[in-house]
Image 1 (spheres, rainbow, N blue to C red):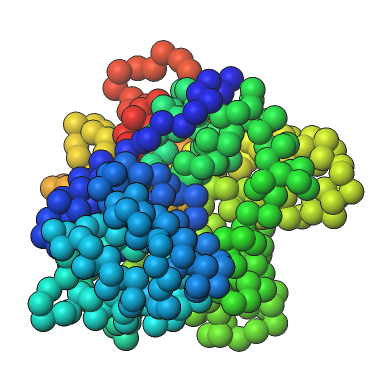
Image 2 (cartoon, rainbow, N blue to C red; image 1 turned 180 degrees about the vertical axis):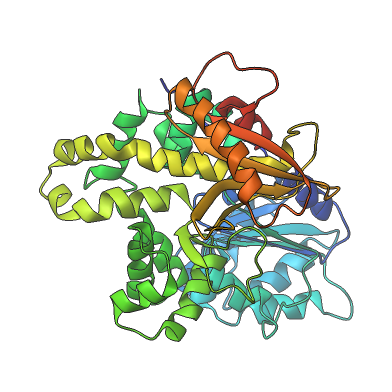
Length: 462
């Protein structure tokens, strides 16, 4: 049952403190916020903006209408400000600086929309910041299009490059916060995260439904659902054409993980895909995976997978059934999805297990980041481990397996398998071996076993 109907503001403690510090600092400061749509950037700004500041949410109208709307927003801070007609952004900012010589904070949300209709705007702001007499205006520029924010503000060639005191990339929330957002624990919280990922707006939408099943059917599978075409909208923010990106995400989401295989399916040279893959990695939709202990420069065993749970779910379960969903066959597709959802949840649970390692004390040790490992033993037999990590003192090695929906007897056999594997691995190097299991299976385990549960993982990921 999903319990919370109105989403509370979660986490973002450091980001909030940094922005409040900047807004209370001397004039002519600049902060830049960017990140994927629906991650809570506007909500964060609402936490730090005061009645003394000017907050303006841009849209996609023509420049004169945007300037007039901005002047209306200033009206609350400077009476009769909108009575004048402003021919340019330079004119409106000049008047604002004259009306507020003691200093004022201007927050431009969805800044890329303004730049679309006024490409000169970053240069205008630069000139104000660089005036010899100084400027009373401090700025927060925020945008969902990471591509346009880079071009307008963050690239070396951008007019405002190097002038920001704070550059904050707003990422999805850590998995542990879903327990607070949706009132869920344990298995139910992991299942919900496997569907919605760490996007606060998705959690807020899902909270209006009695179950994840109902939310999935209405929000995602229904052809009129608000998230039915979400990946397409996200990609449109970042690129002029999303055809290649959609193709890459679709192939990787359906078990095509090697570059050579992806290139073969697309009929393109592997080298031509490096740049678009790197772009999707920068956006947070794809992750590059290497066996534990191998270098990206020397290894030829790189795999690619979809790193965002919602995006992965979409390309596995929604896109393949798009034609049926357009015919309104939501119930039939939902039945197919529910019959296979455990496999998807298990994969996300495995990734959360690895992510939790540095925040957990296992076997009395603190650990570095964890990775998967695959390869061969000394007798050239194939081996694979879900979790491998080195202790901070480098004297111990953590070996772990991650299981979802297993019986206690299977887990006991898994512990014995790990103990045998520890003797056959080529990289142990005489270090102390610590064995751990991540499982959702409830039971009384011997105290000597390192058993990590969903609640422990979620508590670590906050």
